[in-house]
Length: 401
Image (cartoon, rainbow, N blue to C red):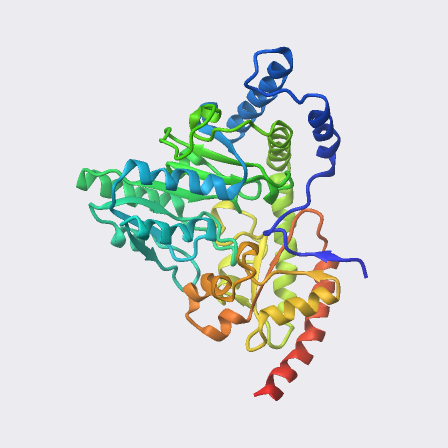
């Protein structure tokens, strides 16, 4: 059986069409874009053209886009800048932010900030009114992700931003609203201006661009923690990775061109997966309400409550980690949560626990995520294999008690 990759939320395969030009850029167009000679001007032209391409796709100004080393840096740059802009105050985070954002909470606490968490509801959604309840005149920043990377729930970012802006107007204060849109860009419509966010973070390797390249949208410039040569408008100093930046722009343009077709394809895979899971004893979609909320077969953007690219499954009392290992032995790659937290059980279960507070369910989750190259046959093979292995694993769990 050929290997089946169902962990696209962790990382997507790079589009092979990008590789030849990237090699050429690394070996022939290697000038520093800050240099004034012809080699540098060639690199600078590629940088400018790619920034303009991304700005057109995202409908923002080119000088509002900052290239970074990835999603983590794009998430941390604007939030860490608060350490220079503010001497203290309150930070509000959703309880199931990616580790790149969530773990900054410890640093802010060390620096004297109070960190508040907003829990999602039973459907895995952060409600705007719950964010509003956590705001106070001391709040300096709010961070809520657009698509949760472990369960796929889509957050009402625009409504949350409206609540924040109303609070600002009523209290004559200023709150920085940051959005991690890493799992959204290239898969569902993303509008930095329409979202109302001050900053949004993106990552290339989630939509078939290379690893090591990200993008930060910033409505207004902010003081960075690092200093250097002044690249990227002084926000992210350091020589730009031109081949990766070029590939980011090309991959993003392709994803925008094929977005509707790939979205429809992912819905077909999701629907097939959910129907097959309903036939398997001991497996169910998480959260339970997702099946009805998704309205199987509905392809309208406005009706999306969950990303069709990510489906979490509850296999409890069988531990998800054990099931993922067994599936891997059968040639099927799935995840038990965020790849960035794979080495820590406590971190890995944090997202699901924030939704259910059930320890057994928390430990019984696996995540299925797919992309354009997956097929319905992949889903059928996965479901058949899961059913076979789960029967044996459930017996083992019962006998061990």
